[in-house]
Image 1 (tube, rainbow, N blue to C red):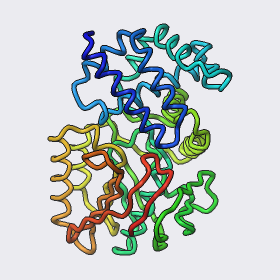
Image 2: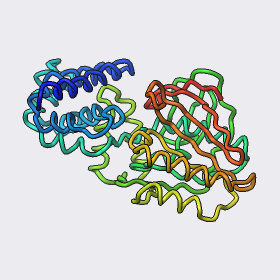
Image 3: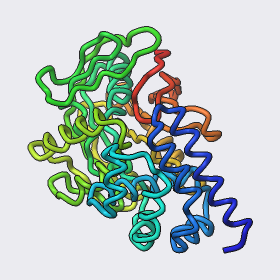
Length: 345
């Protein structure tokens, strides 16, 4: 690998380290910075990132790298890395360097698949948007999720929420989500789900131990409350298995939107998915939903909820578009993992 490629690779890890620190994770930031310094010890991983064919930030390469290291630490390999994650020492370079040298192939292979965060806290933003749609249409929902991963957010009706002091969801749920709320409280409304179905190219089984480990590896190691919430959601999913189809999202979505619609508000939603689609696929998605919206009616409405980065990646926006009419509102800006919601309503 030439020097310019090495600089480009290391620059990406360092840039994402700054973002991780700004998001409250000094540990992940230090891991990424050590990875930047030690990357020469992992030629397969360095070459993979240097030759990445698309925007490395949009592909979340640094988060893939961090997830791979966390997965190794959870396996106890190498022991010096496990000890770092247990806070038994602070030799980041020594631990990360040893992992890169000993597990280069594992790290490179792990990074080929996109992150499987399936962050449950994002369900609070989706739930708040559903309450806004319920107030407009007054109907229960048929949920259609793109990029469902393990499908944990298809179970959003089974979680309990504190949304700026407004209680919502299932009051007795073991999964409690209470983001820091900024701005006015949302208007309370029922979150009644008549049906929920998702799609993913590689859906994960919440009952599978390997799935559990992969998802937990993508949780930042210095944020134990996120891990506890994820474990509770995985346990609940064993009793309420999400319905996820293994398919390409666009033809699957077209078929779902053309299917007969009952007395429900049909809702297409997604969280942190668009960044993994190419420009042509993103445009096709917009056109597919807009065509369905063009034939929506007050009796058979359609809503589209997105929890996504802006194109400039300057902020995460919660957007709601409703048909008939096709009006789009930015309901909130949000922390990428749902830790806070700045509600506009």
